[in-house]
Image 1 (cartoon, rainbow over the protein chains, first blue to last red):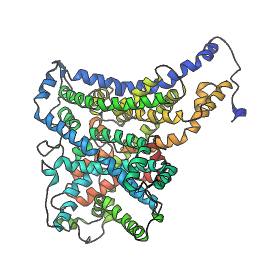
Image 2: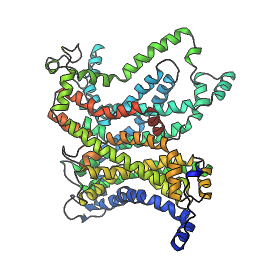
Image 3: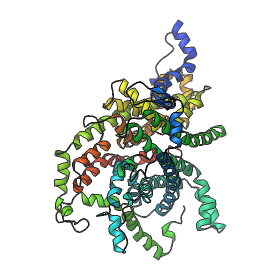
Image 4: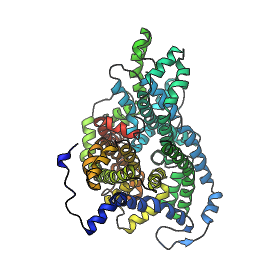
Length: 310
Length: 282
């Protein structure tokens, strides 16, 4: 290494420098951590507890908050919009997971070495790089009942037109389909990198033993893709529960509030023209947080086991 | 390799595969291609209902120059730059330090602090919304780029720390020990030994955070309001309100808004993918 350039730190010894020298290794991590931890605590950790607190108040965001205990949560129990949002959240969670097999399928399709395949991989990944706002706009036009590509194509086979985003039965599925587009691309890239690392000897050994197609995929390839699957699972769950942009852009919660999810409903209650009900909004956020907490606990538990195994 | 390499398969399947690739790609990108085609159509096509036929003329230049010279779009793009770049620098700097502290030193609360960052990174935005908006208002930073930047730096530090710490863990620890034996001060080890080795991680995070922040919509709506501070994701909605039903302009605007992260991705592809896989899948 660069011995010659290392500075001579043995130069001065004395009271304060001596203490610093002895305790340097114990103190340094805290100095390195301080700015990051303080910032993170101020903007992320404390606000979580503050939200719990706000959810016990009636507050319009400007005047004095009034303490009302659990009243916000009582109201939540009889709020049909809350149940609609909750139901849609479940649908989002379940259907969003389709991005994982979808991504795996495309990754297997593209895991070849023909000319130009790198460009194909990049272009397949494309939807993930675009902002969800633009994805939302693109799909709004795709679904448009008068000129949208979907209905144009349906007309070719003598079907339609269906107004996907205007129909309470289809709207959530239509938005999820738009969300699956970038999410599948993300899972695809995870699996493509994972497939690169698959041990070729095991594959060959499997071939010799007569494993082919599905059996090969299930028994030999998938176990080796476990780290990729775990990350795909984490980011897909988080993505599903964070869905806000698409709903806000495509339908703004409509029609008749049928496409709301908790994250959108919270925003609607707390910060839109329907009134500034910060306390009630915070209560919805707390429910969403508790749902997410189950998953976060599971993720951390998996990471903890891995750390201990090292 | 799995599946079986195409060169080892039968000739007909090879040809089918080669033909299938472009078809699959076009189907996959169809909604996007549609928007790209819209953006070069003249206004007249939309009034006459010629949505999917051959464009009556190619007005790409007119449409895009309208977006750039007759709307607030350049202003929004500039705001996005001024929000994204400082956030990238801030979050990467802070997390290089936290990642170093958590990756190199052994102390009792190490894993707990690390888990705090990881867990915080996963929380839904809505649980932070009311207090963060309030805090920003109290600091007089509501509807400023600074307010948005400060929050983004803090939040992204969580994700960046996860990444940096894992990356530093994989470095050879003997290097640090050797430097310590030489009596090198800890901050010098950070600056002269570890930081140069972290260049790939720094690049990966920079590209990734750029994309995340550029594409952020929620916080832009919560913390900013007008043309003087809103980034392009929020701006595109007011742009669309201004040009309602002018689909050629809305399409051109959307493409302009989406382009910078796309360019970033194509220029820095390798780093981008390393970042997305959280360094866990090599």
